Length: 372
Image 1: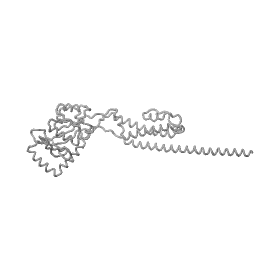
Image 2: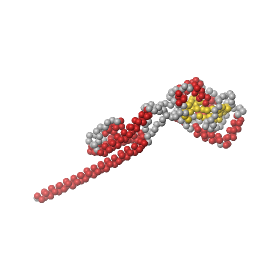
Image 3: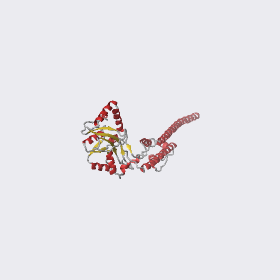
Image 4: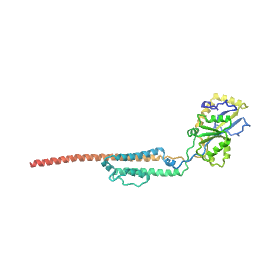
């Protein structure tokens, strides 16, 4: 097989002993015994084997109860609360007394303590601030209860880190693909399969026992070794027999399959295959398989076991945020109206006070004039 999408399905005549024609598993499943000497035409199934994904620690699970949008809204509410408290610290004393009432000296402690279940200190006496505090208490109670219940579920669940789902994930997650190769032909063949579209890092291990030890170390749970093993059907069956008592290979195995044909050159089957390929090229079938091969390269892998429970988001909390922000906005509007009404009363009081002062002055001047 030659590199590049435009060459998928064509022959590679540069190989000294054989050339390779690639087809895919879900076109037609093929199973034939592995034998070099008895047949000039051989069929293989190839697997990517990745085992033992690591588990999350309890510290990593602290942010699991909520999704990103929920955490952003929570920090926005807390930030708005503390910015408001900090801004009121620089307000005139009469305005602070109007909002909080008298004797309130720890508003930030109350705002932070309610989320952790700490008892409140002296509460505001004014109706506006008490209404805001009740809404805030209701919000913190819902958030704290949801976080604690979901956190308990996350801690008691064996949640594992995600495994690569495609060859692209192998590249992005810095996996090394290890394969067992001996001859130059095998090295060229595996390299052609894996180097398509700048594939992942490849490590050719020629020693069978070295490959076996690395394979077993990954299966036994060594998560520091980020290896994906590229093996054919017979190697996979041999490893299964070797590690038949190993639980990881039975429970945590992910694989993807492709099938390929390997033929020795200068045999009786070479000429019919050559003629068939030459007829398929003008018909466009090979181009169709080329496009299909590109799609297959990016498709997710198959898995023989169910994934662990995924993290659930809580979209219902968005409704709670809407209610909370609605009440908060309504309370601010009511407070502005009350503050405006108080300002008008003060101005009217000043105005009528001046009128009363002028009336008293006028009456006194009139009395003084009558005496004289």
